[in-house]
Image (cartoon, rainbow, N blue to C red):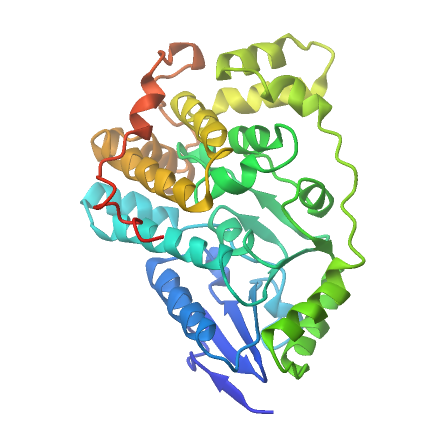
Length: 377
């Protein structure tokens, strides 16, 4: 069996390997929890497009490296998937007026769309941290594998952003009002919740992943359809989604406005979970909570492409609606990842201070339909 390395440099942030009829991708930036840079996004786009058009590639899989593993061991190549985008880069680029910031989001959302519409079986090994951009790399997969180590979240409201990378599309399709709950709070969930909420397909023990990865490279499929049949028999046939009780979540997160949600949570005196969620929401950007709630509810009736175009508008406005230093997102990243004082100065400061219509500006596209960066999706 021949092996072709598209990225021969072992120090590269993206490693792409051909084993037999499988294309195998490893995110290799473990010290940054495999956070995505613009060069990584561009390399992933190039790899996936090349393999899409290569009839000899029948199945594609993606995993992340683990900074805690012993180099050179199979275990070191699992345990951490992707913590999202490189938010320090977002902060620096926004303050510098660097055009690479807009390029990052246009190309990342193009990558998300490619994965969601990929014509060949695509398997995501969602072991360890799977957040933000990591969800964008995995939610379109034919099989989304989680383990006992999976820590999944869309935590963007914590930095004054919203759940992008198609988050409006896939969160809004969770059962009940789980989408609003996960989007607004940014709560971390594990494997069982991910499967129950429709954000993963199968749970495996982390110890089983190296052998499965090796099996992908050793199985001689004659076509992508045969690979799909193998996947269906190995994963899908035996997987049953557990019943998902969303009553407690729905009771609060189905309410019309952010203020209604928070008021109801705070009034539930005997509900510890509700009290905890109220405290969480009080820490988030009040403005971006309103933007996020509107995003999820609009996206529920949108196609994937339309949702990504809406999110491209929104993320541009997150950085450009106000001067960079005044941006909620720039301030949130400063407080969380740059200065690390964990004291963001949100504007408005309180949920009660967000006036009707303030969120509307984030849904007005700065481009005509023909000029939109994602017009060709």
